[in-house]
Amino acid sequence: MVLEAKNISKRYRKNGRFILKDFNLSIENNKLLVIKGQSGCGKSTLLAILGGYLKPDSGQVKYNGININEINNDKLASIHYDKIGYLPQSNVMLKELKVIDNIVLAAKLVKGNNKEEFIKKAEDMLAELDIKELADSYPYELSGGELKRVSLIRSIITEPQVLIADEPTTGLDTVTGKKILDYIKAYKDKGNIVIIASHDDNAEKYGDQVLDIRDTYHKQ
Ligand SMILES: Nc1ncnc2c1ncn2[C@@H]1O[C@H](COP(=O)(O)OP(=O)(O)OP(=O)(O)O)[C@@H](O)[C@H]1O
Ligand SMILES: [Mg+2]
Image 1 (cartoon, rainbow, N blue to C red):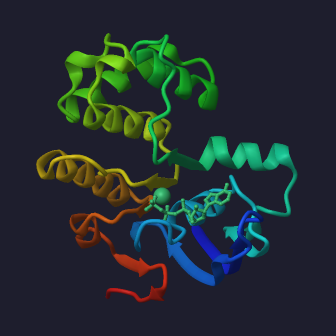
Image 2: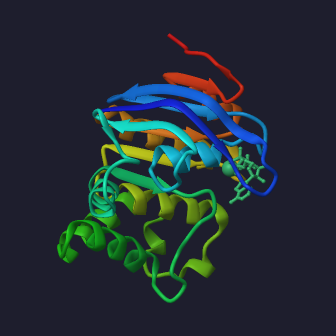
Image 3: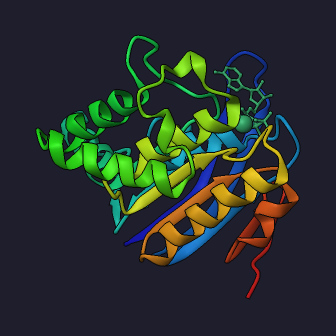
């Protein structure tokens, strides 16, 4: 899998200034890209464009050469379901459902009805992230760090080839943040593409590629 962005530009109508201008990147399997930059510089905007959730004003986003802005909605939905896991900056959970059901519902939507299999897998993943005992809790009973871990599990339980994680460690203590980053790195090491936006200095150390949104550079 190769994910490329070519000459991406974006400005929001509200104030008219360019958030992104002629932006380029390329990333392939087994690589973790960290996008950094100060608050408001456009990290979340870029991630949403890379995932095909927001259209750029100009430029192309290609998955294995396919421009995701030129395909129809059904095809885009199937790429979203099949290939992309998206961890949004703010946690999105259904408050009426227990943690385990939030995770399994998302998995079932994407991959069909393998409920028992997904429950087992979700329990294993919760255990790996030290929150096994929270399976039957409700989202409003969880701390921010616990919710982040649940969101992460929810976004990768179906094993998407591309994980896009927006600020996966914001607001967390160093130990918990590191645990999440280690887990994300392990997911990358299984052969996936991972892109994270972060202003956490720790996150930068995990990047095979680090990209400052105003000043592109690559670590070897
Ligand atoms: N839907 C929108 N309409 C208008 N302006 C927007 C919209 N979304 C974001 N912006 C503006 O675009 C700029 C970039 O926002 P974005 O969320 O991409 O930044 P960010 O780098 O992710 O910031 P943070 O580190 O705080 O999460 C900000 O100035 C923001 O106010
Ligand atoms: Mg953001």
